[in-house]
Image (cartoon, rainbow, N blue to C red):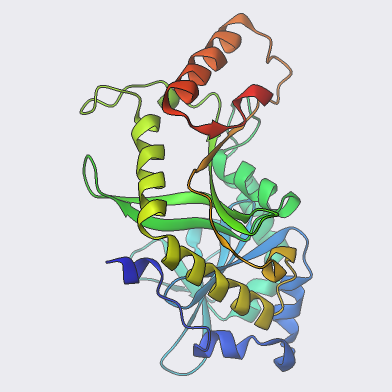
Length: 279
């Protein structure tokens, strides 16, 4: 199963197609758009994101060309082909690029959450990525307990020492943070981070090799990310739990202070590395 978590070929046809020397005009527009970011995906795909939403999932067809898939909520149906799952549309990538402003606005309008952090977790994730220092999002693996659960870790970064570090993002107001799992009789965040760290311990070498390949692909296709040039030396054994702070100016409300204190106690008991002291 571990091979599925790290299945990547740096010489796959899709990656060769987008190499810098091919100078594909519409791809350069993607790379030059400061609001968009590019992640390399296992099984040799590329995803382009805006505010945490995928505006383009690129794959290679049997007809030896790139195709792009996008959620139908983000784009009108003209000229697109609805996929068998009834959620995604398939387009020529060039058409998505010509309509990127329309798509961005659709994503902004799609869900307007009313929460103390001012945005959905996905939106916060996307804004953090373009402003921060990350090399990947949504790394996927299967958590074994209590049931096999497909899990995606929100961020991957590389520390100044060259360590791969996984980062899990949570909104501090998320009701699930203090809610106890009905099966485990304890807050689910405890087992979630334990499972992440157990996965890291089991697959250190695979993780290092995988992200070295990610660096190669990103450099080859022209993604300008400083972390592509950092020498990877290992993996941090601890997932960082990053809490998005309150953005509505009411962090000092007594109920919120008590909430942060309760979450902080879990962090202490579980020895979870986090930014809770900054909230």
